[in-house]
Length: 607
Image (cartoon, rainbow, N blue to C red):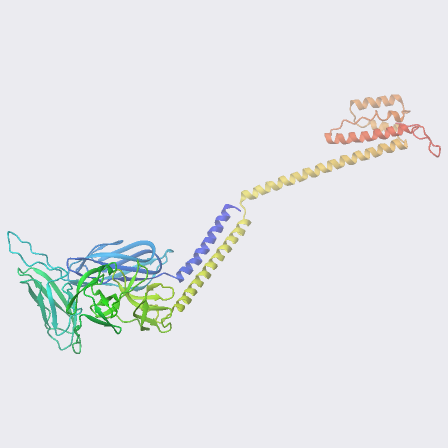
């Protein structure tokens, strides 16, 4: 087939396949979620906001525009990110479904700041735009920073040393009315509290850790409904700033809620089991990403592990039988949870207590579930009843918290959002995935059929259309074939005519010899035939000898005429002459003999 036809077939088939594939891909577009971490920091410090982009398939290109509060924070650097003045652009390409971006900022002013998504464009490998199913934002808490040590010049008196993060500028802090949340820790400078509508002033009791240091309290009077900010500033004996504690007080309608103090600092009851809190333990038991710290629980200082979330602490608890395990303690909600990691090591998620203010997933039932041999608080579907999957509240290695769905059969883990559908079990998910896969297979099959049909059509159409050069070549080929056939037919006709002429001549001559009816008149008529020089001489000799020539003289007198003929025709006539000579010889052998009627045969042959 001509090259042009092949090209047309390929183009038609490819176009049909791409068109059908485009229809399928538009029907099954990529879906993605964008989430952020909520870090806490201090003025003057650098901190990192983690942005997690997660799709239900591979993400080929990412183009996200972010906005942030440029008065309270300054953008420093980031993964595939650039920007300033309150705007950041994140652009990257790849083939992963889960991508993490670290964005580094510097805190400029205390307070609460945020990082929001202004626009997002994600595409899969076929350049199809993704649907953003969930789009979060980062809430950044910026506390006042600790002042540096005053420089002593010219033998000036030593000032009080700046406290470290482990000790802090205060040794104790309390409110009346109200309770700090979480419990006071010298290194923690951000707290919250809730009071009733009848409270207009809060008494703040703060004890400096450094000798000679002083405390200045502001914002604790004339409280209004809603949020109020109380700041406790600690200064050294030389009036140098040592640090500031911030207490966000919410004044609500009704009475002030009472928070019971921790009465037993040595024991805790979890799920009906009483555990003893270890004062120390082997810090090699801490998982990666955690470091040892001194944590004040109640009125005791115990060893704990601190990870990406400053409000989550790992403590070691002993059961009555002596067995011990690590447990998470959330100092904001005062809740406990066994330390359990779910999933692969690189992307393991730790089960943590439900954070304060976070509602349980709607449509799910609260129930104890077993993960990695440990019983933790979880949620199950109303239809599934924990047979195939469960949902739990967890935290990844970057400190991001959220709900996760764990497949109890296949042991797979994925993020869970309220929009995933409450009560949907694994069987329902598999059926939905089967429908999607079935539709994709049908679509691809249709695309293949259309491509084949287009290729066949182009092949047939290209076969019917011939170029002028091809038509001319075929015409010349047909003419040459017709000429050869005509030449062959003429050759056969010539051979047939010569064969017939020779046969007739032999038969005529034979009849003359046998019947003896050849006369001189016949010979005279033969003279009119144009012979060559040799033939004329023979005729003259025949006339001189007379008409009494016998059959014996017949053979030598027959000389072929010098006609303009081909070699093949001449050979044919020569064969005819030979045949005639043989007949003459046979006639001579029977000359003078009588037949049964006593009639003479070949006695007088007239030439």
